[in-house]
Length: 270
Image: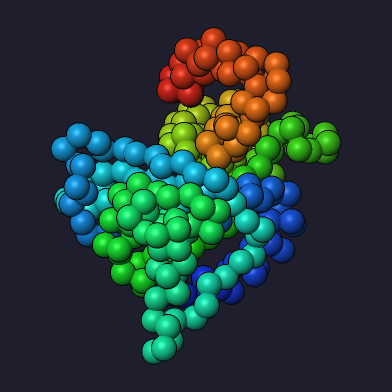
């Protein structure tokens, strides 16, 4: 679930190819690379905390209960796209673990990370419980399929062409921090089924697919924006609050709008 079934050699090639593919697909680099693993480990705080975010300068660490005494974790680090880790060798068998241990050096480690931050030991608890081969790295891309296009044809049929249509992450990739990727894919599937249920002739398929994508594109574009904004604010909140007037104003507006945002996010619309 965390990393997929590709080995390190394939992952390094994918990192290089992804930049080219994303440019052709009109995708936007989020600014974050992500390390992830499903650790076979019972978290020390599992009885009181099932979801946790640790925030730091230019990075953050997310963990959630994976069930069966396993812990899913994600380490997001802000850096340019296309970076790769050294290949594991006999002399250096754990390059990814070594980097993560430096990036999330705990308060028990002298000096902390490269920026002088000292992290809660919980991050290293999960990192150290993971095997090097289980940790996968990928750059995170998202997009705004409605707002980023000026092609009239795409506005009429954003994710469909002829008898082919996209759904889920292929249509609207988004940052993972709101937990909405799978949710929006489920909503897509329901709407797709509803539109195709009314088809009585193959000549109607193209119109049904176009309508499906028109119905879904506005909601998913808004949620994409929320997900990216939320990810940026996790690491930039302190900086935002140093801006006179603008910082406090933004915080107040966020607090006032949060009930509406939560209702919008977590009320399914098919």
